[in-house]
Image (tube, rainbow, N blue to C red):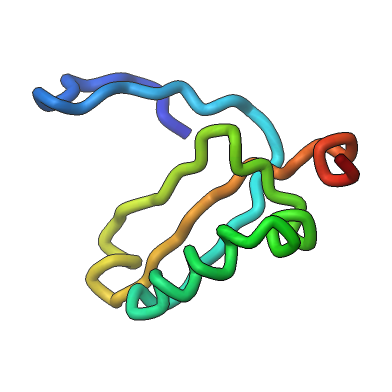
Length: 84
């Protein structure tokens, strides 16, 4: 959890992420194109209950990217959104 804000580099913006349930996807970076092709499909969005309208985020740290791993967090859709 972030407890203190530092300076934001030029060209970047700060974003407060809402406290809600997220679906986490972790995979090898070499599969990033396949990941986006799969999750751009509406049926797959429903299957995994993703809210693709809300902000999603990716984490960057010493244990992921140096090892070729991507981790993306999608907000979980409300039941009403999934059935629509």
